[in-house]
Amino acid sequence: MKKLTYLTLFLCLGLYQPLMAQFPGAVEKRSSITLEHGAHRLGKRTDAQMETWRNYGLGQFIHWGLYAIPGGHWNGKYYAGAAEWIRSWKDMPKDAYDNLYKEFNPQNFNAKAWAKQAKDMGARYVIITTKHHDGFCIWPSQYTDYTIANSPYKKDALKEIVEAYESIGIDVYLYFSIIDWNHKGYRSAIPETGEEKRAYEDFKKFTANQLKELLRNYPSTKGLWFDGTWDKAWIEQTAFADSLEAELREMRPGLIIGSRFRADEFGRRHFDSNGDLMGDYEQGWERKLPNTIEDVHGNDWDCVMTIPENQWGYHSEWRGHVKTSVELIEMMAKSVALDGNFVLNFGPDGQGAIRPEETKLAKEIGEWMKVNHEAIYDCGYAGLEKQDWGYITKHRKTGKYYLIVFNIPVSGALRIKLAPGSDIASLYDLAEPNRNYSPEEIHRSKADGNEFFIHLKHKPSQPMVIVLESTDKEQASSVLYEKAKT
Image (cartoon, rainbow, N blue to C red; front, side):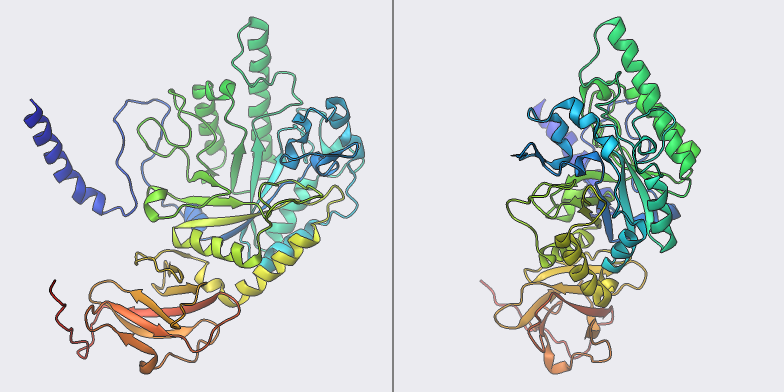
């Protein structure tokens, strides 16, 4: 019996391996369970809207709401958690927080200035918090009084943001939290009594109405980014959430929704019980990055990243490590090199101003992007061996390779290994496109004809990009040495 089992496994693997070779980075489905509410599509979306998303490279996230007013403090006490969670803190009186909307009057809020800073940084899309877990809406929702319309500001801040960003060519995506601490019907646990269940049914209807309202009121937005979907109560709404997602997609053909909106009937989120992605891209990379292409399972994905260690909304006191612009540029390069997008978070204060530290970093990233954006936009996984000096991206249309260098070897020479039968046709610094590397600066290994050593002209003070155009026609001069036998 054991021999028969091994033989069956061997034959299955024999058929499986050629198929998987067509999909670098893909992983085997873990089972073949029949699911009604699992993934409704296998593989990547190939439509124009998703192709645009795939090619963004860099995005901006904005967390902004009532939590920006206390800014991580209350009555002189420091809140060590993420600023937008301060309402859940034992030292934050709930009534006091819930009445902060009466103080929300951001006199320094300028959506056009936000958009310009994002544009100058190089962002091509933005994700904006329409409402966070506290339930306060920055648009005048007709389904609740807990909105910006009843604050001293009164105006529709979301409308201002959408119009400002889109006017300069930045696509807008709407963040929406399923958790809503302000709604009387919200429950985190599974409702047990009839009254509790009826309250939660009201909450479900409210949630659906708000989402449809957002799509109606802001018809140019490209997608929805969901949060707060981990509660048991929501995980159990499998059929409801699946039906709602279908309705939202019908309302807006091409709508882009990530993997965290709903669970399958077995409670699995992101990936269903067969191991297939639910949604249009993987949202599991929050404040962390994959290390290899295998880690992303052949799916589209993005990384959302904070500048301090764990602050999304405005906290007036950043503690711990604060990332530098070089660290953030490296994270962006790594994301794109592994076929993803990188989204950097900003947390404006209660008056609507973006803090100086964030402004400085955005400027530094923007200065680098002005010169090197070609290595980020419309680029993805290069299919070449990763090197310790940095990352390699490949333009999806031109086929050019971009060597994004962060760590200069002591020797001053970068090692790169091309695909078998390839040669370097052209090599130049992106900052100096008219000056090719000379033959003396490029050494091809005689023991391994696919390996090259590029001798740098100088040691840069910032991450540099070298453009490599390859040819499949191997040069006649590249006679290989016989490799040593051991």
